[in-house]
Image (cartoon, rainbow, N blue to C red; front, side, top):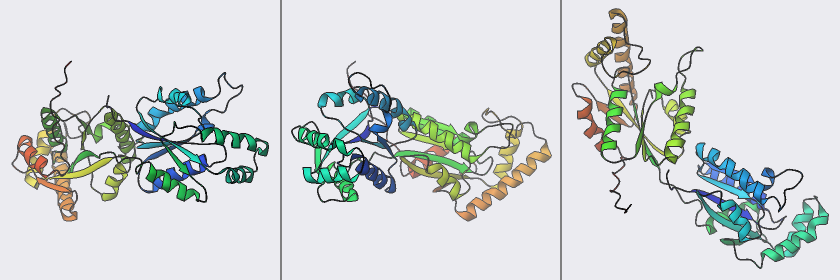
Length: 369
């Protein structure tokens, strides 16, 4: 399992100080900036009766910990939590369960007259205002939070920006994970070359994963493969592979349109995507189509060319040649690699040299065991 921790920003403070409002604004600002952010209001995950002995922190901590891996699987880059807490011991009830969280605890405060005004302005449980004041005075005597932001005279967006700045530009930008996507016309060699690159990375000591999009988009009866299904399944695999410490992903599959690629990229949180288009001339495509028709090449489930009659294979090759020409005219892909007369092994060096996000091999682990 990777030791990468998921940033957690916890906004605490007395009732009425604006924890939920500021937390939601932090969530909104980060989301607008492209950071895949999750938001949780602590009150909303501990509404139960009767209350458990010792208060609700045990329930909140348990429920947040249960939700945590789901946020991870969906590609969350950080989590914003709004909720009260008064002691370091209470905080530990959460951190003991969230062992892969990088916690920043931010206490919001405000002068007591403004706190009263805010609390009563909500029009909800005004009889509790004196308790809110007492809680504020108690919190002002503590030092367990990582930082304290005074909200007097500030708007909610101003407080949110101040919190992000005071937390050191939270969350720290996570390094992008390289994704190399092999595309091209039918029989261009996508799966074969992609897998060869994957094998080379493994020999170089790079933790990597490989996905053939066709193999994760098979659903029948009900029609042909769909990009939406493949994109969602790829995103699910992506989250799991990243959690397991993978440092790059190799993908093979159709990427004939920019909007198709964008649809996948939007679900691959934290990816540095490069599309490598493999090109082959009409003669080469015809040879490869015929070879696959005879059962040659890698044994891949669902190869629609295997066993086709000569006439059908000829039509497939002609369509592939038209597709290759169309992709060339459109300038599809970030990289264009010509595969005519070259083996997959011969192409690897050129592809890796041209890949702008090529991961470097990890140094050997010299830790004594």
